[in-house]
Length: 99
View 1 (cartoon, rainbow, N blue to C red):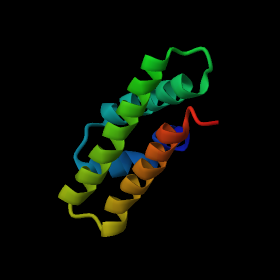
View 2: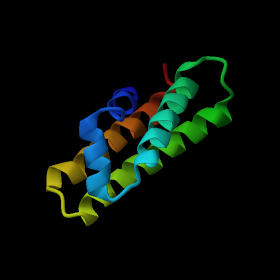
View 3: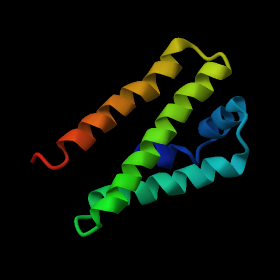
View 4: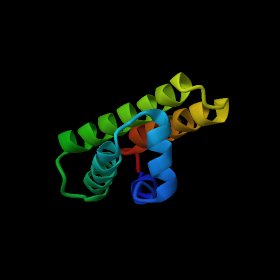
């Protein structure tokens, strides 16, 4: 999510959001939300319910990315990659209290 947030300010991501039909301001909003979400997950004193919301927001983001790529007719790899990251996010959620 950090890498995605940083990359959101590049020209390539601007073109990708345009390709998906999203307004340019959404790219910036999403980048800021990613930075906030990562901060919530990494800071140790953040209440558990806020961490839950960060996981929820990231899940919605990844599912929406996959759906968006599907509906504009992108290649299957662009549809699968967000789902793969969703699996990693799910593993992170499952194991977050185990270690």
